[in-house]
Image 1 (cartoon, rainbow, N blue to C red):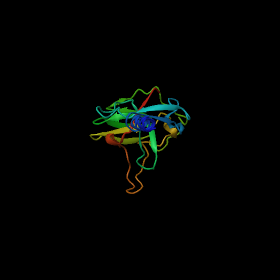
Image 2 (cartoon, helix red, strand yellow; image 1 turned 60 degrees about the vertical axis):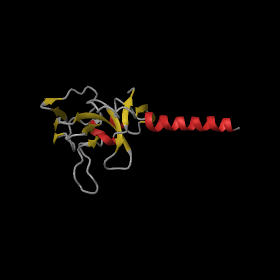
Image 3 (cartoon, rainbow, N blue to C red; image 1 turned 180 degrees about the vertical axis):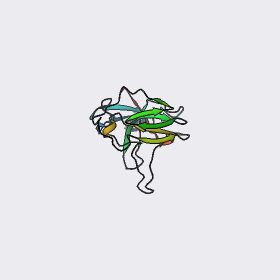
Image 4 (tube, helix red, strand yellow; image 1 turned 90 degrees about the horizontal axis):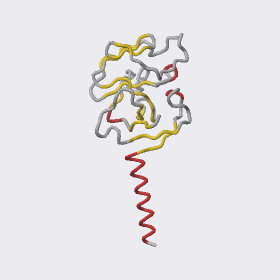
Length: 167
């Protein structure tokens, strides 16, 4: 009997380690990353991805929202030291228009909040993130801290929970 309890305990411990430290399954709950990740899409988050290296431009990451009590999935657009501006829905990165074949604009003829934005230089250990479905994504363009009422442009690298795999 004690052998079975030991094996069950070992299994539970192993599952806990894998889920909390290595990999986690998620389900995409909103259309903010369409067409890359559709609503209901199942994905695996590599929780070790940034333990020993920094995020790269283009990575799709999971992190806690800076303005709500939930996790978000967004694409890293700019990393520490990058100069970011948005002009007429086009991301300008370090003085050049960013090539973004994954972006979806459903309201192309409308200028929305964040479609013209002077962000500036991304601080050290921070990233600037956007959803791929730009016209329907709450992201670095429009987050306002509820306590300070200041714009939240950047996500702290230390708060990133992992990188979405197999998108």
